[in-house]
Image (cartoon, rainbow, N blue to C red; front, side, top):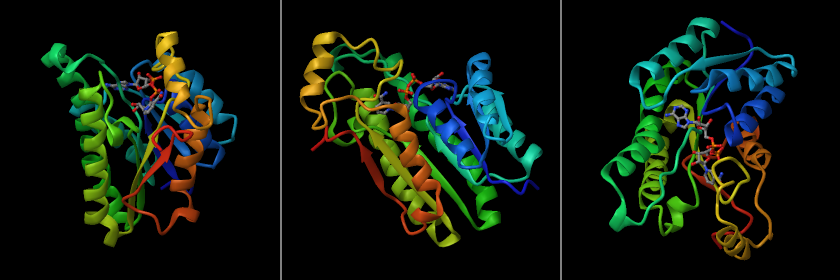
Length: 245
Ligand code: NAI
């Protein structure tokens, strides 16, 4: 079994997931990067290795149960342990409710909520055996406040909060701490196509008057994974520059 702690980060090829992978490597974690685009993932893995730790790209789709199982088996097969699971992979398929197609609803729910359940279901048995472990789920302020045009996304992200709290209650007595991070507007590919007018309007509601950086979310994940957060479970840490105030 590896002496170093092992983390799985889903959707780690870019954006917030890539920043989380790099940050955890800097924190001395071996990182398994679960990516659909394994070529992009390799670039991030190489950056992780610059911190002197092992990093492994596992290609796959988090909505596919078999891919999730392969990911977890790869982690255990290579390193014999999983200390931290970060459920970060996510998508948006925005539309007004009256126009929202069933496939837009399903795709977002499957990626942003069901995959989180699936990964937690697969990883927690190993944490139970070890009597320790951490899970950090990336939700969104949209899951707390709701957002016009994002009924599917807000429902999925609110679901992640319910899942996080319920699992924290179930598994706390076994030394497994489960929390969520709710980012506001963060500068990534997900938000780069926001029309300028909409981006400006959003910015007017952010107290800090700027969008966040992926590294500012990675720092919260790093804290929740650390010994400093040993008495925190079932919480949603909002990192939104004051958007949802
Ligand atoms: P992004 O679009 O830049 O990255 C998402 C990553 O997830 C990509 O690498 C993508 O390939 C991966 N992914 C998506 N579906 C997948 C699947 N089925 N299987 C495997 N990987 C998959 O987005 P960003 O901004 O980095 O978002 C990361 C997380 O943060 C998401 O859960 C998102 O909902 C959440 N978030 C982002 C905010 C933002 O303003 N950027 C705000 C609040 C939450």
